Image (cartoon, rainbow, N blue to C red; front, side, top):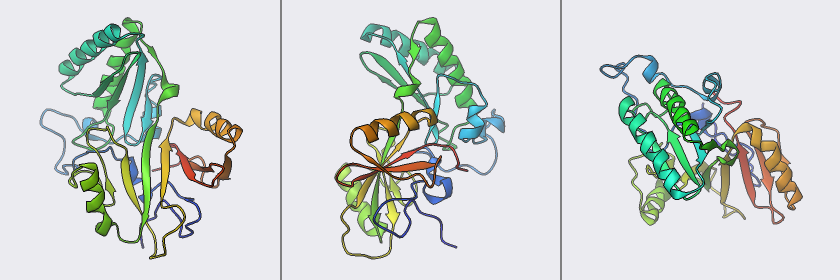
Length: 262
C-alpha cells in the first residue's frame, strides 16, 4: 500500500499537508536511529521519541513542539542581555552534555532542542529545556511562544529523484541529510523542501506551496488575520493537522500543527 502524501491527487489545492504518515515530524539534519539500544551511560528514556502529545504532558509552558524539535523564544530587550542569556544557556548545556541550537538577535534569543542521534525530541531535551527556562526566568527574559513557527516549502513532482539534485546544488545543500523525498539544511538557516509525489502531468498553475507549522493556539488567530487580509479558507477538512488557506490570487498555504498526528 503506498505511503500517504501531503497532497491528494487533485492538484488544484494541497488538501493533505501532513506528509508520509507523520514521518515529517523528524528533525532536519537528524541521523538514523541506532537500533542497538541506548547510548553508553544513557537510559532508554533518553532515546525514547516524544511526539507532540507526549511533550504537552511535560508542562513546559515556554516551549512549543514544532516538526520534531522543541522551540522557545526569550525576550531580552537588548544585545548585551541576550549575550548573557546565551552564556548561561551554554553553561547549562555543558553541564548536561546536550547542546541546543541558539540564535542571538538584538531583542530576543531563540532556542531549538532535539536529540540529533535519535532525530526526535527525548527526555534529554525536556530536562535541558526546563533548565533553560529556569535560567531565562532568573535573568528576567520573558518567553514569547506566540511568535514561534517553522516554515517548509512543498514542490509537486512525479519524479523527485530527477529534480532533487538540482535543488540541492542550487541551494548549496547536501543530499546526506533528511528523508528520501526532502532536502534539509542541517544548520536550520534555510527552510526544508519536500517533494510532493504526483502523477505525471502538464505544468500546473502552482507547483510550490508553503507549509507553516505553528503552535495549536495560534491557528485560529492566524486564520482570522488571513481572512481579514482578503484570504479564503480553502478547507478545514483535515483539522487539527492542517488548514488550507489561499490569497486573493489563489496561492495556497497550509497552517499545520502537531495535533492529530502519530
